[in-house]
Length: 252
Image (cartoon, rainbow, N blue to C red; front, side):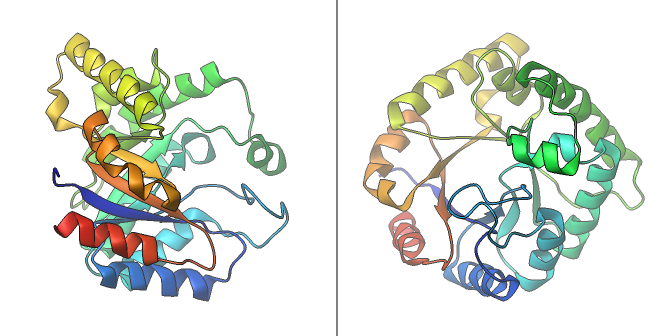
């Protein structure tokens, strides 16, 4: 079996902050390569009014609670923060973690977040256009900050073939999408074509796949589809046993 990396996404809903902190510390001790949250203001499933926490303040806490894993948001909603502010927040979290932060970003989609926090929802096309405009601004602000980032790779999440995957080819160090494996393979091939179109070495872009614990039996198929890094999505009460099994498998 090909070598691969392992991550976990902890869903910041229907739990306490103490539970989240215990979970990301435990994941770090397991030896995962990456730990992720999501960037929303309300639960995405279950009780729509359950407990929920803001992403970037949690990430700052994760930066000082963990010591080994890289970490970030899977993915940051571009609409929720000015791109210059987002760059500065990311740089600061990067320094708090001694260079382990990853800026995962996407165009946004969860309409309730927009409505209740009074962000203009627009259209899928306008949000993608905003992301295309923001990415160069974020990179420019990284260059202007004093001190600058220690190391902030950019991961872009999404699978839109006409715009999102082109943005990945142009700007990203990593790409995240979902299965099943046949769908992942098809999107991966489109990304390779965009890399050829824009003159980018496709090997410079890490391919990550967000999976459910029930998909651990599909790892070989995902590897054949091009995935290199598996991020197991876990909700409270944060059972990390499937993540531990995947770490053991990755270590061979």
